[in-house]
Amino acid sequence: MRTITTTLLLSLVIAFTSCEKEVNYANNNNSNNNTGGTGGNSTQDIIGTYDFVGISAHTESTVTVNTGGQDLKSVTISDYTSKDNTGTIQITSSQFISNNLGYAIDTIMNVKSYTDNVLIDDSDFPFTETIPGSGSTSPYTRITADSISIVGALGAPSDPSGTIPTGPVGVKLAWSGDTLLLKINSSFTQPITQGGVTGVITESVNGVTKLKKHQ
Image (cartoon, rainbow, N blue to C red):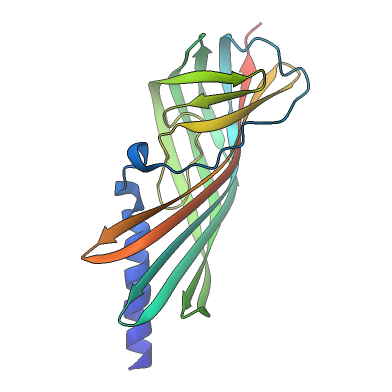
């Protein structure tokens, strides 16, 4: 009976993780954004046309549920660097305009599951995803010489749950030669409901998007 109950609880946690992509973060994003600090050559004008070089990210996703008198928690962690990167981005005084922006992810995610704070499963799973080339427009606001606030999926790394916060997200700017680095370090917590059972999602993303400026 214990094995059956544990299996059912794990299934419920997985269901909550899977449904994260349906949550509307645009209206409920409680970001803790990193927009401060200074960076080398950070006052350089960012307006221009860039090649998309890629994204590197560390993501953590925690789903907590209380059902049947038990506290359930699933923690998913992934680290990746994108490959097969394509596309260009034009940065104007108020927008990021992408064209044929796409990439692929091929890595491993770790999932730990707990019942009443006791670890019941620790497993690794493939995390593979292909983002086909597409275009979008993301408005942004300059906050300081080395930080902006941007709305939209651009620059927000993927995580294994499929969630992409739509903003606004704080982005720190830095330069490495002719490559613009968009650094994101944000987190948010939000309640959700799945099948009549309530849960809470906590997401954190620490990532860097690299754009090489056209000469």
